[in-house]
Length: 88
Image (cartoon, rainbow, N blue to C red; front, side, top):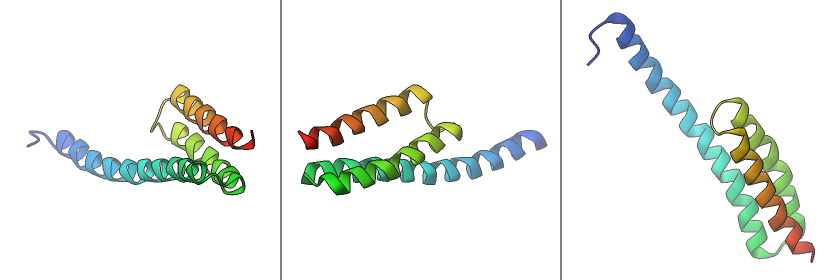
C-alpha cells in the first residue's frame, strides 16, 4: 500500500498503463502470428498482405515504447525472410 498521495497516484497510473500496454502487446503478437500462420499454410498472397499489415503495428509498438527498435527490426527481418522464402 502506498504511503503518500504521490505514490498512490503512481500506483493508479501504473494499473492503467499496464492494461493499455497489455492490449497493445496483444495486437503486436497477433499481427506477427498472422504472418507466421500464412507462411505455414504456404499462401504467398496472404503472407504478403499479413506482413504489410504487421509492419506498421511493429513500428508503432516501438514508438509507444513497447519494444526496442532493434527487436522490431529483427522481427521484421525474420518475417520478411519467411515470406520471401515462399517465393522460392
